[in-house]
Amino acid sequence: MNRKRIVVTSFLVLTYAFLAGVIVYAYSADFLVNLNVTGQIGVNVKWAVPEGRVGASGTNWDTVFFLAVHNPGSSAALETSDVTTTAVDGTHLNPILFSSISQGTYDVTIKTNQHLSRRLSNVLLGEGLNTLNFTMANNDTSTIGPIQLLAGDINGAGNSNTTMGDNVVNSVDLSDLLNDLDANDPTAHAYRANFNQDSVVNAVDLSLMINNLDKTGE
Image (cartoon, rainbow, N blue to C red; front, side):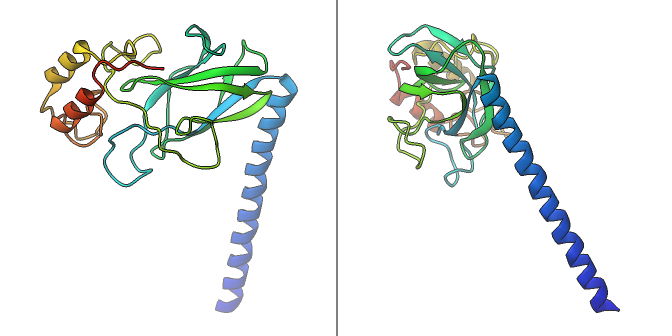
C-alpha cells in the first residue's frame, strides 16, 4: 500500500509540473506574439551593474531606474519609460514598452537615482522584445561586461524621471552625502548616498563619489 501511494503521488507531482510548464510557456509565447501583432517595441535589461556594491557578484545590484530613447547622438529624449527597479542580479526581464517610437536605430540611456546615465549607441530596436546590456559598449547580450554605472548623482527629491539627479556629480551631491554621513541604513535602501548598499553611509560611499567628482552622464 505504501508503494502505491508513493507512485500515485509522484505521478501527480509530475503532472502538475508539466501543466505548470505549459502554462508558463503559453503565457510567454502569447505575450511576445501580442507585441509582434501590435507592432509595439519592448525592451528588457539583461544587465546594468552599479559600481562598488558589497557582496558576491549578482547579489546586490538592484537599482531604481528609467530608460530614455534618443535619436543617435541626441541629448533630447524621444520617449522615457516609467521608473522601475532591477533585480539583485542587475536585470529587468519584464518588458518595458515604448509606444511613440517606430522600429529603427536609436541611442538608449539608463538613469538611476544614484548614478550617472549610461548610453548604448546605435541600438536597433525592432518590433517585439529587444535586449539591452549596459555592461557592454556594443550591447553584446551574450555575456556580462566590465562597464558599471558610476555612483554619485543623488541630488533631487523623489524617484521620478525628473527628480533623480541632474546627471553630474558635483558639490551639490557632496553636500547631500555629508548631511547623511554616518547614518545607519539597515535596509540598505533608505539613503541614496549609500552607494554600496551596506548598512551605513560612510567613507566608502564618500570615496566612490569623490572618484567621480565633476563627471557627467552620457
